[in-house]
Structure formats: structure tokens, C-alpha cells
Image (cartoon, rainbow, N blue to C red; front, side, top):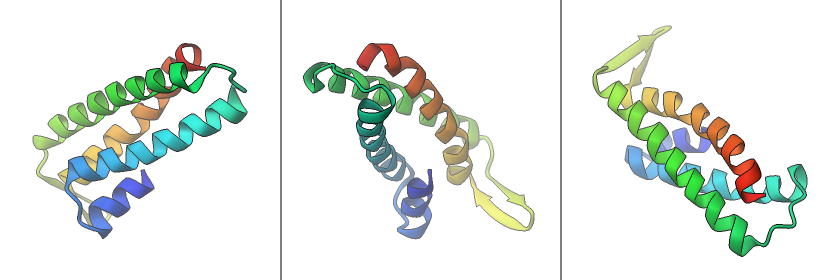
Length: 111
């Protein structure tokens, strides 16, 4: 999520570019680390890799589309004297669920 916020706010990328790029990089790192260390998988990359990335892609679009739609009704927010625009609220809402769903769904499917 930190990379997404840097891309969105620091480099001023558009919401969909920042969230997709940040999640793509995070998914690649997650796949490699989970495959190697967490599950010690012997499933060939040609089988597990595409499955993993399809699950991640589905979770990405579900999480960030829903959070983006929810925050469209919220113009902005002020928290502790800090202005937070609706895209940043959507990033905060959409970020954590994607990783929870991703690990749960991919454990038996991909590894």
C-alpha cells in the first residue's frame, strides 16, 4: 500500500495506474516469497503462476472497484487536520482486503 500511496501522491499518478502498478509489484513479490518460503511449492510455475495472477487480478478489480465506488459518494475528508481526498480513502479501503483474499484463495489453488 505504501508504494501505491507514493505513486498516487508523490508522483501524482492516476488512481487506476497507481493501484494497478503497486499491486502488480506486490503480487509478484508475494508469489515468489510465498512459493519459495511459505509453502515450499513444487507446483510448476506454468501451472501455479497463471492461477495466482488470475486470482490476484480478480481480487484487485473487486477490491479497488468497490472501494472506489463507495468513496465516490465521499468528496473528501479531514482527519486530525489532514485533508484526505476520496482516491486515498479508496486506496486505504481497497488495500487490506486484497491481500487477505489473495492468500486464502491461492494457497490450495496455486501452491
